[in-house]
Amino acid sequence: MPELVYPPVIAAAKTMFRVLDLKITIEGAHHVPRTGGAVLASNHVSYLDFIFAGLGANASGRLVRFMAKQSVFTHRISGPLMRGMRHIPVDREAGAASFRSAVAALKRGEVVGVFPEATISRSFTVKELKSGTVRMARSAKVPVLPVALWGTQRLWTKGRPRTLTRRHTPITILIGEPIQPADFPDPNLLAAELTTRLSALVERAQRDYPDAPAGPEDTWWLPAHLGGTAPTPEEAAALDAVGEERTPSV
Image 1 (cartoon, helix red, strand yellow):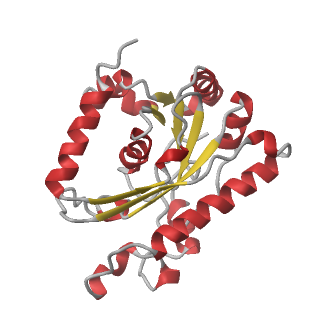
Image 2 (tube, rainbow, N blue to C red):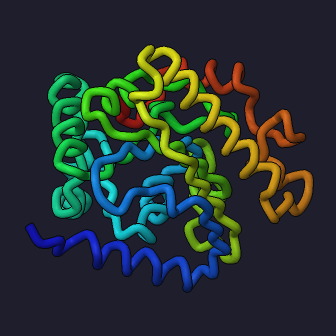
């Protein structure tokens, strides 16, 4: 089936990146296989993460099918785009069906993007990962690639105003080596390996980030353990507990 929607959307996004002069750094793009199924498992710090995680796979010529909440597919504006790009709807009342759809896509050779933390991390650290990412990769017998995003929270994140016209913002995209489920017969060990690698990538992206807060009022986008004023993981968990809307995951 021809791709009539996804390529123009990518072209439009790249044009916007140039207009805003975003300083995008991508490392590890060669880890994304040019053929065959794979799961991209990204940390989650921004509402725009799916755009940048997908960009990381673009060099390999892959179009990532992201799992997204059902309501996005029924919206009059986003719905046609989401369906046209063949993303995968997640219905909370029928989670098993969404899981099966993702596994089927992987077995067809698609790259599926997921955010295993399930919600944006207010603390900008890696939260506990849900088990579905590992189960999906094991069921489809495809690799999992950890993806670290950093800087995207400065454009639009939970609890902060959108700054989509912000110029010259550095954005870091790090793609780790594939994790092969066959190397981890115990799914718990596979889950632990994904957590370890994803956390290490995020920490490296934070450590090597080329920008610093402009002043005391600009420290909100740094995690507390790096001297920022973002909520601690414990504070972030308390905020999430009040019933914030969740990003679909598996």
